[in-house]
Amino acid sequence: MIRAPVTSDRARWQVLWDGYNAFYGPAGATALPAQITDALWARLFDPAEPVHVRLAEIDGVVVGLAHYLFHRSTTMLGPV
Image (cartoon, rainbow, N blue to C red; front, top):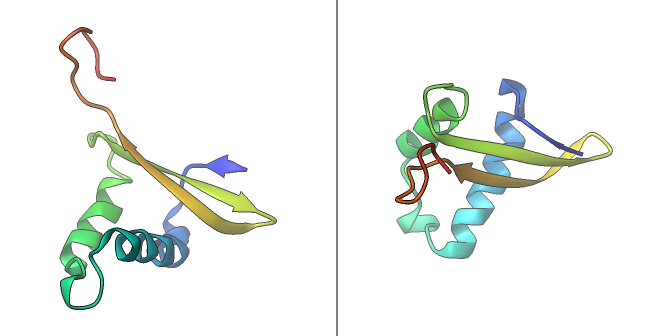
């Protein structure tokens, strides 16, 4: 099942987020500061923010994530 997060998903999301960052480089000494991760988590629940996340869940366990954002386009009136 693909779904929006709820605040109680923070711990499992954090594991996946940290793994995502480690895969792309920011880990260990170069890991993102907790302040950035905390800000992202807060933004995901702020309806005024363009950044969003969906979680993949199997048998009640969160197993994946997809972050996405809407932004202005040069060829459309609304965000894409």
